[in-house]
Length: 334
Image (cartoon, rainbow, N blue to C red; front, side):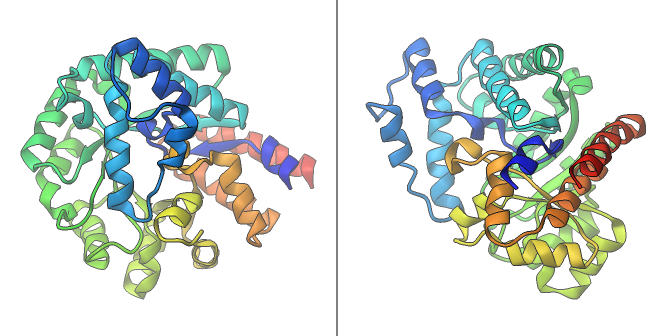
């Protein structure tokens, strides 16, 4: 199974670029930019990853971003992730980025996205990995700030495939951003939103993303399984769910293997992703291997992988190209 997973052609649809900031790079960027870190080694950084729920994770996550200042920093961050992903045979990915986490620190939007985009283009040429960028709004900031960020993005619209919503979910329902997402759709962006695991008022939030926002995909979404009217509607629409098992093990102390299997049984298009792999110490292959170690079969891993290509925001010809590569691999590995 480790060899099967390593060589399996993959797509990743839920990974935060800021969450791929490895401790070694954090130290290098801090030195480059004269940012003082509260740790004396990369090992000390990892030892400080003491989080057990979403808020405790976010506190560490946002503080670590302060080392990201220049266009070169965002290039280096993005290229390092894409190189790692390609080494794990990820052929296509749709990474998130959080512009407000940087613009509120005085880093211009253009600096952030230009560095990311140049890395995407370089990695496509050098490494053969295709990627499309998703811009996330921070839900614990105001809708007005999100709208300003949306407007700032329009000069770079060709570089962004969709928009999402992440950060602390408590008291920040999807409906707070209804107008922003309506405008984003009008500008041609695809829509997704985080519905994190076991959050306050989660079932109402899921209802809102389905009925009020009318998303094209749901990030996480485990709690759709709690109510038949939610999971049946997700299955009926064929919506993708970007599940992150190792992340779940940190945040809710459970890989949610049984829930992922249940999604497959219900015909839901669950996918597997790494979320914030530098923090959870697990990229795509490690997430898939964790599920296998917890009892998932080869056929289930193959279906989860197929789902990712099928729900990716790709033109039909590119999707067919990747599915053909997956089918060829699975036939050879049978």
